[in-house]
Length: 166
Image (cartoon, rainbow, N blue to C red):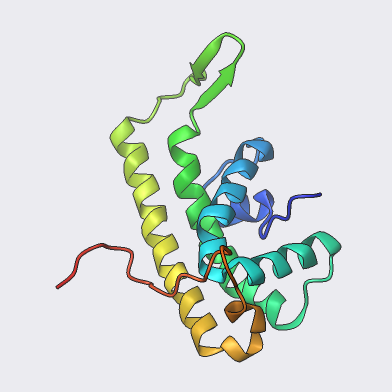
């Protein structure tokens, strides 16, 4: 079965500082990982599966299309970038792990990469909160949001990412 991507690598490249010549395959795995870890957690298994099937079939429409375009894609842009950045400078090949370094280029310090990744994580948290708020306020539009049973993943409606209790 084909993997559904809720956002295309090209859309992330257009929305961020990524170089247009970046190999899209390097970004795709982080989009999919973010979908599985985060988006599926926000949507719950049933809504995630419904939207993924519609994306693969090319039939995503109406409130589902609006949910994807207005809420999921902005979240995925920053969540995927946050995951991608720590790995962006590396390639794993038959000879081992290689760090890229082109002529007339300076490799960013790890602290700089971490700071960029953290900024994207902060942005993804913001868009994640908007996504959850929208789903909670419009749950009648998305019946799959509340139909998970058994060991299916229930939607995470907790939009406070910290573990602090005051």
